[in-house]
Length: 165
Image 1 (tube, rainbow, N blue to C red):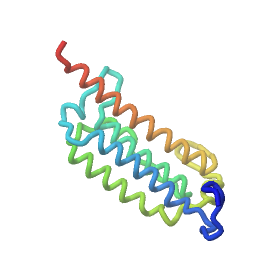
Image 2 (tube, one colour; image 1 turned 90 degrees about the vertical axis):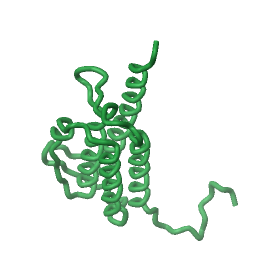
Image 3 (cartoon, one colour; image 1 turned 60 degrees about the vertical axis):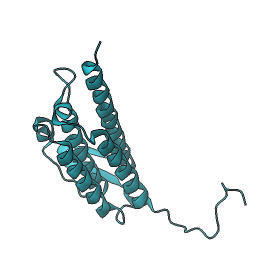
Image 4 (cartoon, one colour; image 1 turned 135 degrees about the vertical axis):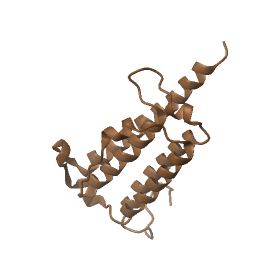
């Protein structure tokens, strides 16, 4: 049998919840790897006046991801988004603990999310937003990966700003 052909002995049900949780947990691990060992100066540094420090980006990704999963599961909850951006820089250890806690919190969705959640219309009352669960998931993924890239770029800009010329 060709590798691309379905296996008659394979389960009929795709484990959507596990796939989704595993993907987002992997993204959180990438985020954690970016902050590992950084001092508070780097974590609080902003490349320009109207930009966001790495510490705040990490808090924002965690908060937004939580909201995305609550909307996807049909139980929308909000958070204090402004506080994510106003918080004083945390240490790498504090951020790692928060990332780890967020990774653990995602486990509650592993056995709960299904194809039906992706097809259902979901509502986020605070934003008066309605969309399919799939669209909610894609928005959450895109948002998190965008900020992961922003963290990487901020690190590069910080390193470049400190380079001996």
